[in-house]
Length: 295
Image (cartoon, rainbow, N blue to C red):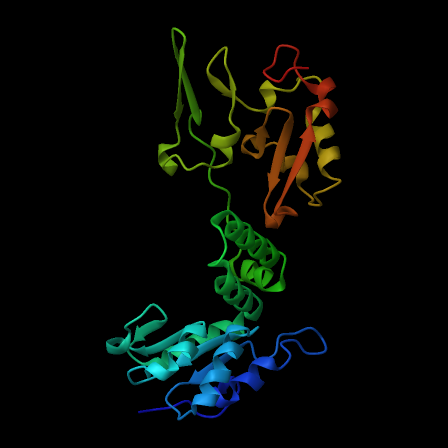
């Protein structure tokens, strides 16, 4: 049976309280030792195990157990407090235990992943520890907050740069929302079969002229003589700094016409991710008198 060798991030139950209590951040704010691999095959006294469980439950780091034999019942409180424990497949008898072919190798894969993105990994571990005790609405709020915080971090920026630009979905080949009147009934049909009617920006924001049943782009909303593109470019440039802004604003799928405002969305390669909201009051002189947005 192989065991964890001594080294960075590797520990035994007796050392766990001290290792978990060590500061997570160094003087520069960088995360130190984001993951601890706990060797569950090493001997441990009852006092060691009793102290290790609450230390693991309150850890700021990702704490992973590694075992090769059948879990000792005396270690169940510690195993429950760990973020997860990798064991041979035959011993994966509970939700805390993840069955793998080689526990040591898989633990190292997990440790490498945590080390590569320590901010995301520690935030996820903390979220999973306590959000399960929350009501569903509060848990969703917590998840949204964690996700939003990570979007503004350096790890996400590095991931985006490594992935490279991803083009927007192509514009809908036909009206994304169809209307059909029959007497006093109005049938509304989502018409993006090529995207399985995904609830994207075009479907959500399709402005439909009820007189014709056709979706309307910016040319159908703004006066052709108003130089609306130049004015929108001026307004949006206060929030979005990109050299080809006027060309971007020529794309109809950027526009989401809501009840009281216009929304324009930009991705991370265009100064975003960001949505610019413009109240119709600022656009009144640009609007068609007979258009679908009232002046």
